[in-house]
Length: 238
Image (cartoon, rainbow, N blue to C red; front, side, top):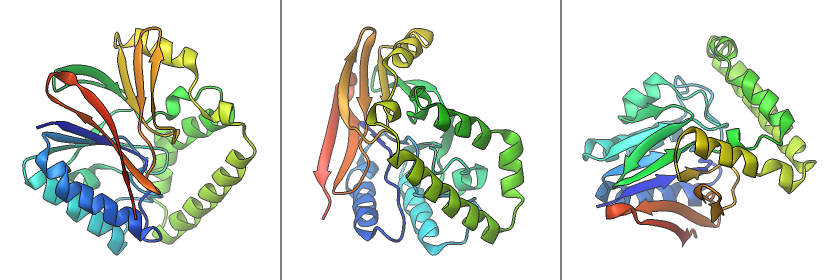
């Protein structure tokens, strides 16, 4: 038995191949694990737990099937699905995690995060994140009609794509200094995150950082086996 971690699937009805790969991953991999950790951006957009979109319900039911099988499922909000809340947690049977979560997985102590908080050189994004994650704005958003939230989400996505197209790759990646400071702060030598869409294993002064990939032509997950051995796994999506 092992623990599995995924992030950045950006699920939507417009990408059926990725969705089918995810459902297959749940049936063939996740149900045979001890735990599944989803480190944000499971969805391309999430405008609230009250969204009746059939595709969202399909994903929720699939996760509920995994949790009902005895697998512990954990969810960390990403920058695309930060409005996921208690109803989603209840309906899927998953446990919501804070932005920084330390835990011991199969005997290995790790720090889990989505990854966007490490990208401190992107000052514009960090300002947006502070505003978007504020309790006041989240309260306001969740009290807007569903159709208004849909329009806002579409506008934000369009603005984000335009903004990122004008940024250097260096700015949108993590800051090595922030990684070192985070490792020291949490007294940890292993960090796992997503967000940057740059799957790899990186050596740092105080330990190792493993980056999950986004799902597109390939699917990505991390498997932590007994005694803490870690594998970064990729597989082809049709």
